[in-house]
Length: 64
Image (cartoon, rainbow, N blue to C red):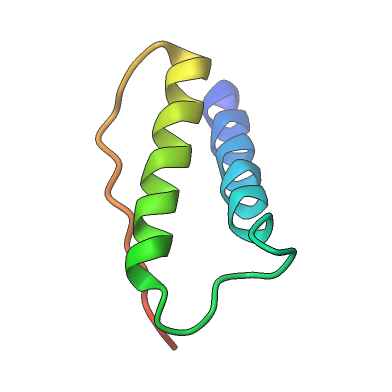
């Protein structure tokens, strides 16, 4: 269980880094499609590197 919690935290950090690396700021309003695709690509690549498995990634982005 501890390993999965570490993997989840590392995945969160990877997503945050990928989304903020775009011009040094977060995504702008109306970029839901970009954010969905970016999250899916980054998480898929990261989890494959870490686990050698390809889980199904279903990002859910809500505008507030």
